[in-house]
Length: 586
Image (spheres, rainbow, N blue to C red):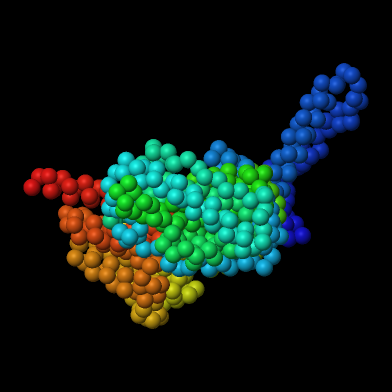
């Protein structure tokens, strides 16, 4: 009915104009009274006319399809843009992924109804360990390894010791739980391939201090245990946290993925233990080994559903930003609303959807995560249609203009983006007044675009306007000031005004720490910005120290695969090279 009513006004107006145009062009109704003849108005459809009749059927079909297309689109007669091959692949994976996640969650609920595994506390000190020299892999002489060959020499000696410890652990679990389950499995893998290990050391740990990166490889010696019951898994983790034989090993790192499952819903414990290994000289050294602890039923279902396939696809697609991806999957479920997400469904959404919230989610998904900008614009067009049919509320229009502007910004079409943001600011000033928080944020967003255009003076002017509004309406330590101060620091840095930039970065850091604590990702990013500020001045030693501090926080909060972490690590490698070249020159 809502759809019907949205079409009525346009239909009646169209009919009225068409009738008036005919009356104007043929006032004597010569055309209307022209007699084409009864024999052709209602012809006899004999074999003589069969080909013509078939042709007319095709024309009728085309006409009907065009009429249907018009009836389902009130925004445009253009075709919906073609979805890219990459997005089509993405959509083809969604349905299987969501079904897999649903089944994996159900299996966990069945196997651990009391959530004993999900609530197991592995300990904060091993969830986010401090990477000090104490945790570096050691050579057979007890010193941090300096090369891949030293690491593998130590690993060869550590492997049999590790296997004995793990088997002993399993025996203790069975004894404590009165369960000698034949289905339980212990698997010891070969030493990790040297080429893969070297690649990981260079990609993930090259910037970690103290170095070298090879000293932070904990999975050269590795194995896994599969238990058949929740009780056994809990007992195993208890024994790992508090070993009965003091000095044999200690838990140094742990992930409880029953508490925080992977994207596909898979759950297990992933831990690292540091063991004591005797050497040939009568001494000993420490070596850290990896151990995965699985639930048999969950592991079996995961293999059956190929859950790791979906995990790796989406993890790669979103460049390792798995926390963000979890939110995006929630968006996808809301957008789909129980229907299969595919090209046909998205086309329907873009032409018939009347749900503004779902369209808003769709715009963000198209724009920010799929890079399908034309589809994002199409979704914005659909919002305009809804807005037009329900009163053209100015604030609603401003919100749509803002979405259009953000899409143009992602396309790096700066002038178009600014033009739409200026429409936003005009509406906001009229409807909300000059001291609105929304007005301040729009000033900030326009300033960001001027930064991209290297128009720093204009950017600073608008940051100043935003700042002045926030000062009037917010407390001095509100988190929004951290954003404004960081943006102003970036602008001054781009202008080559490094002292001013440092001052604003320091102000930003103080606000962020007060609101979010010292280990928040924005604190890490502020340190990286300060490091880059020093780097651009040629102050490489100061830059390296701050970069490392910021990267550690980013690594801890975002994970090693996040784009910000990768960029920061690359900058650190470059800084070390510059410092090395300076030392060589001196």
